[in-house]
Length: 289
Ligand code: AMP
Ligand code: MN
Ligand code: MN
Ligand code: MN
Image 1 (cartoon, rainbow, N blue to C red):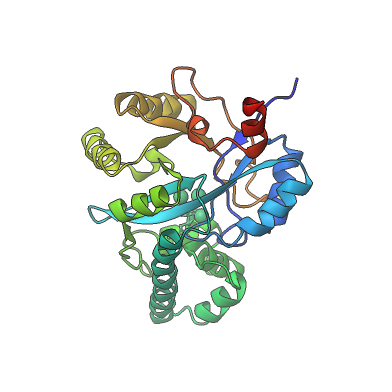
Image 2: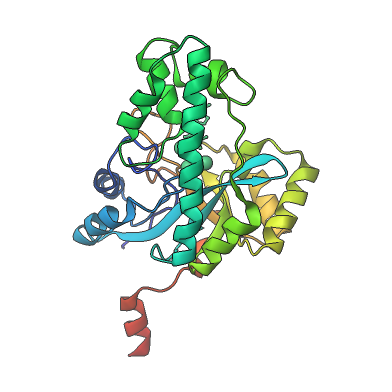
């Protein structure tokens, strides 16, 4: 029997992933993934290459993105799944996020310089190439140059909220981000809902706003979620009638805890988000016959 295996959240070198889109798709295939969404931070630049490799390897690729958003002064990540990557409004929207990322990179580098860490800007510009510059690039630089001994250390000492090189950033407004996704024909999904450390009442407030703006889904299973976290996320999804998604949030093969396709199954009482995806042409032809 041909088993369908979904992984609807991962990164390539178009943002902070270690592998090219081509390599991500091949690795997903090796790990038995049959439907993959590439969801780079604030960019669709990796999708064309990923699609070519997916087509050559008989893997279904869902066009995706992970948008950086601000709601009530806090940062949230919203996945856009099954988007049209050529949609003009989406492209215009993500351009503002890309400008913000570059501006923020300058500010982070400036703060690092003031903290006796020179040379970060040139290093991250070089490492990111034409892709998005993320805090992961700064963390890599700090690690490679022995300012810290682990990636986590880079966030704990420099890059994390309120640390010395943290730059408070206004990302896309939540309603705008959801709107771009909807305009591009996709569905908006809350990424890793438990990572924001919201109290239950703030989570309800957030999800109320998310639903009101047209959001439809929530990640229930992510790369490292344990059974208790799955249960808690599923509880909110049920309460707010959200579709459930599963995605590894894979970035780098060196992280042994997270692998493409290595995911628990969605609880049976949660409607899967892929029910919302546009059926592909082959399926449409089949049902027409
Ligand atoms: P940014 O969107 O540029 O602020 O960067 C956020 C990215 O940094 C996330 O998508 C993660 O990949 C990475 N990140 C955030 N916190 C940590 C952490 N504590 N350890 C390792 N990577 C992290
Ligand atoms: Mn990331
Ligand atoms: Mn994220
Ligand atoms: Mn992610």
